[in-house]
Length: 103
Image (cartoon, rainbow, N blue to C red):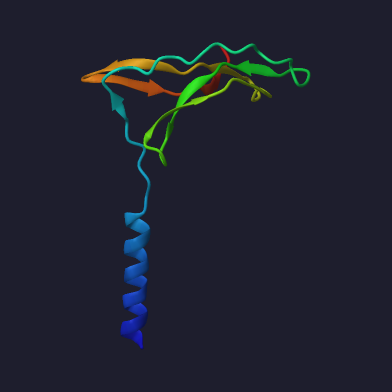
């Protein structure tokens, strides 16, 4: 019985260790073109911040996908830093937008 319990613990530990997700950088040779320009909808509430449309990595499709702009409530003492393409060794890498410390 002890051997079975130890085997199960070892098996579960191995599964947990090997299922850790890693955010790898995805490099593309040619940056995707920005889709059409869409009018900004009316603000949904006071104090909201407009987040411009941007690319994001869709891990299910294994491709960059376009996320429409949206209104968001800002985080406390933070400002939105827009996403941008960075030139990499063999192409371009997308850095998504994020809430950064207000300067």
